[in-house]
Length: 143
Image 1 (tube, rainbow, N blue to C red):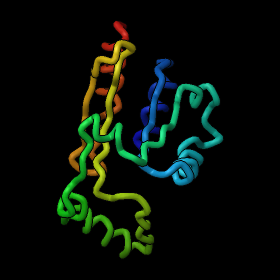
Image 2: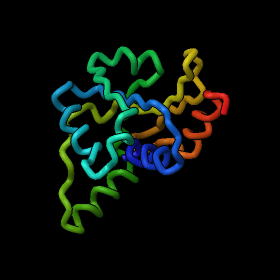
Image 3: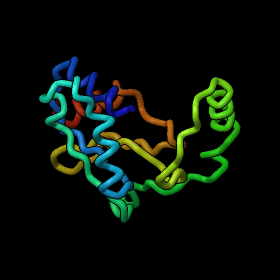
Image 4: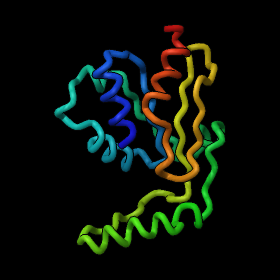
């Protein structure tokens, strides 16, 4: 839910910045994910600056250097321990419906197309701190 944390921070700090959330999921899956992320309790103006774009062909993912992880990185000891503890606590293990090996990333691109922040995740949970994204947004806008 990194996207939600970013939006909350932007909203609370009254920073207006367009956010493009890209997914390699097919449009139908992306639509169901969007409904989870964009909770009705969140202000409409908060959501107005977000666009969701499906990229099932992975063209844009590849253009930004987002390849695939190894099985060991995705299903390594840390991840297996996390799911084992979840199972022991009586929580289910979520089903994976998309490619679990696909890397994610975060990018800030200014109006001129210059990349102000490029973060390719080493695993699915690797995301830059929200403050680092905001700093890149502010530097790219000249603020």
